[in-house]
Length: 361
Image (cartoon, rainbow, N blue to C red; front, side, top):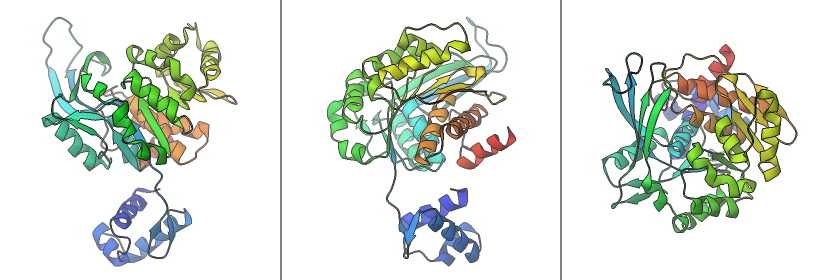
């Protein structure tokens, strides 16, 4: 959908009986333009009939970490063991929350299940989620735990030099909490998990909802190992090369061996694998197709959040029922949008900005 169609759809959700002239006045466009957009939405099956009856919601539930990102960026090359002049910024983050925000900004109906504290950071995260269009009502709020924080320091090139994650609160997002939200999970079109979740939570979700497409972000080598017993429940897996090698126990020497590595995951039951190869691009594999998609050139500003944007792009593509190659390129362009802004989430993230990158590349 176009950005204008998304705006009109939001007005219709708020008031299905709203007049076209009222929408035109609120959006600053003509009544005839509104009528044209409504006709397009009807042709796309989003509006089903008179009275602006909307089609049933197809929503995604993201289950994972939500934290406050504290980012340090030096003005010049990073000097370890010394104080570096630079900038420090704070913004809502967390792999699961980042995926949810990117997905919502792309125009997909997105709901988040995470654990946050009833503290300043937690309330800022919830407020930001609402502003970004994420339904965060299912998040667990705790008065006896601190909201997660993620402290990272970039090098002079904008890549991450070191990071420390304080995410103890995510352990409180246990099986009992998830069971209380099972109705929402079962009605979802798609589930997205990150490996910050406890092993018990991962086991519950991957064993009890394996009839649904489940996309998983490995997060890091330190977290990815928890997924190994439950790979058969994963539809789409997004590891980087190091994480994939650690999980599989297979070390490859060059890109010609990527099919062997991907096939190991298929043998465990994973339907689709997207191997992130940095500047070499992405290797996509399913049981019928394997291809290496070259990276899109980008002037990197901040590497944090690129992987989260990539997985959100894959999820948005799945909801739109796009083919594999188109999905891969769309997700890679979403990562480029993320890489080109200092914030973990580029405020300009949208389907329109992603398609602009694809057109330019």
